[in-house]
Image 1 (tube, helix red, strand yellow):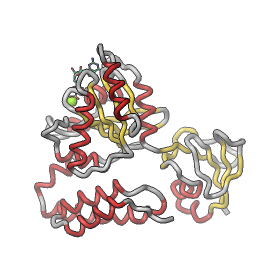
Image 2 (cartoon, helix red, strand yellow):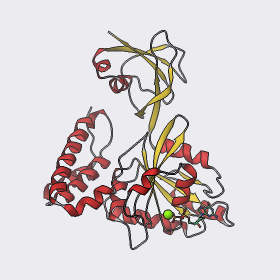
Image 3 (cartoon, helix red, strand yellow):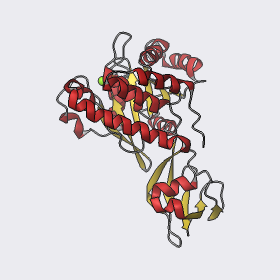
Image 4 (cartoon, protein in one colour):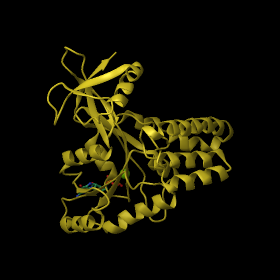
Length: 315
Ligand SMILES: Nc1nc2c(ncn2[C@@H]2O[C@H](COP(=O)(O)OP(=O)(O)O)[C@@H](O)[C@H]2O)c(=O)[nH]1
Ligand SMILES: [Mg+2]
C-alpha cells in the first residue's frame, strides 16, 4: 500500500534535517507522526519515527536536565484513545473533566499544582477513554507542554463558553495551534459549554454556522449534566476507532473486552493484533454483526465494523 504522504510531511522532514537540538528534532518527529495518515502503508514509517523519538529522548534526558519538566508533563496514552480539552480560562474544562470522569489519584503525584495536565478516564459503553484537562489558552499565552500533548493526542476537544464570543475563542485556539505547527484538522470536536445559560442558543447557532462544515459541533451543560451522553458518543466517533469482539468456534463470543482497532481495519490486521501467529496462518473469518448473516464467511481483506464479532479460521 502506498504511503500517500501529504506535502506538510515533506516540509516537516526538511525542517527535521535542519534541526539542531534533540528537543527540536523530537518535536518535529511528533509533528510528522501526527501529519502522517495512519494505515498499513505507513506502519513501518510510523515505527521508524517512534524509534527515532525514543532514541533522541534518551539522548536528551542525559544531556538536558531542563527538558525534565516537559517530559514530566507528557501523558502516556491509556485506554481506547487520548482526548485533550483545549479552551480559554473559565470555558469549563475542569468541570467537563469532573462530570465525565472519576477523581484521578495521579493528580496528587505531581509536584507542580498550578499548571499541569490532569487526567481522567471516561467510561463509554464497554471501553474507557483518556481525557486530559489542561491549562488555559489565551491570545497571548499557551503552555509549551500543552502544545506538545496536542500534537500527539488522538482528539482535540475545543471547549467554548457559550456565554462569550464563541468565534473568538475558537480562533484563539486555532491560532495557537497553527503557530506551533500542530496539525489538527481531522481530529477536532467543538463543544459549546454552558447551554443552560440565557442566550446560549443563539451563540450555538453562530458556532455551527461558522464551523459545522469542518468539524463536529455540539452543545452541552457540564454543570447541569445536559447532553453528556451525546458528548461521549461524539468523542468516541471522533477517535475513529471500532470495537471488535472475538469468538472461538463452537463457543459464545467474548463480549467482555473488545479489541479497539482503527477504523478501516481489515480482518487480517485484526488477526495480527489479536495474535501474531494469526496473521500468517489466517485463512478466512466468520462474522456476526450488522449487515451480515450470522457466521458469514469473509476474506482476509474484509473491512471490519464497530461491534463485529469475528471468529478467525487458521490453517
Ligand atoms: N452555567 C454554567 N456554568 C458552568 C458550566 N460549566 C462550568 N461552569 C462554571 O464556569 C466556571 C469555570 O469553570 P471551570 O471548569 O473551572 O473552567 P476552566 O477554567 O475552563 O477549567 C465555574 O464557575 C463553573 O461553575 C455550565 O455548563 N453552565
Ligand atoms: Mg480549570
